[in-house]
Amino acid sequence: MGCRKVVPAAALVRFVCRGTELVPDPSRVAPGRGAWLHPDPACIDLARRRGGFARSLHRKVDDAVLGEFASAVVSGDWPGWSMGLPKG
Ligand SMILES: [Zn+2]
Image 1: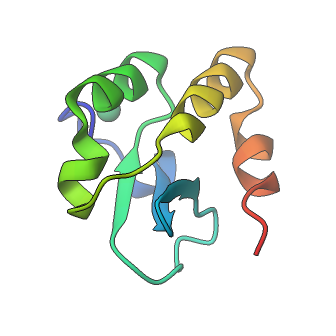
Image 2: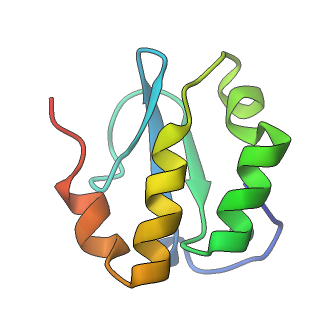
Image 3: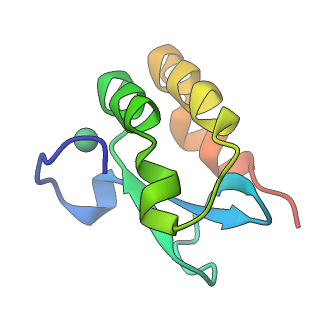
């Protein structure tokens, strides 16, 4: 979503909207329109600045989670981070 790099789907993280909040979907099967992102800080930043999620999901979304995702990517624990969220 942020960039147009082509990578295997397994290398992407799926995000979905829960209410107006964006959350990761490690199971990749949560209902609703999903948005895919590379675990790459530059890609995440690009997606945020472009408002790509709101556009792709056709609604206003709280994408604060992307900041956390970027930090997790930088520190190297994004797989665990994305699996630990979301609840409910
Ligand atoms: Zn990307």
